[in-house]
Image (cartoon, rainbow, N blue to C red; front, side, top):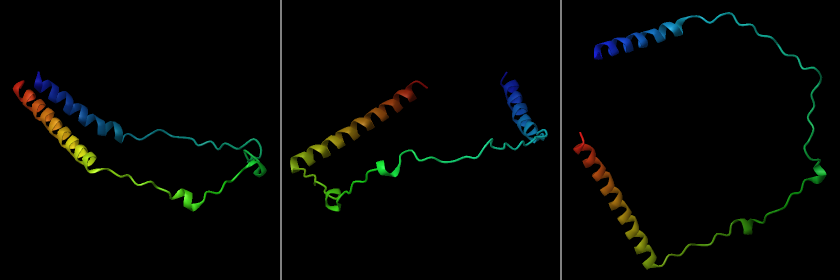
Length: 101
């Protein structure tokens, strides 16, 4: 049965280049002429557009983030704990998969 599947796959793979090598039929190109002239109309007249100026000082104001030392230590410990849990899950899944082989 496995040999039959291999032969069928081989014939299928060999059939693709043959199907792609055939030439397409004749194609006709028909130009489409517009019925009339085209024009572009603005969405809103220029009198209705409003522009507001943003000052450079207001755009560049950034508030610094200050972490106290206890918060930085807690953040680092949480990152380490998350990495250990992730590694444990990955190793456990690998061992479980190897046991079911």
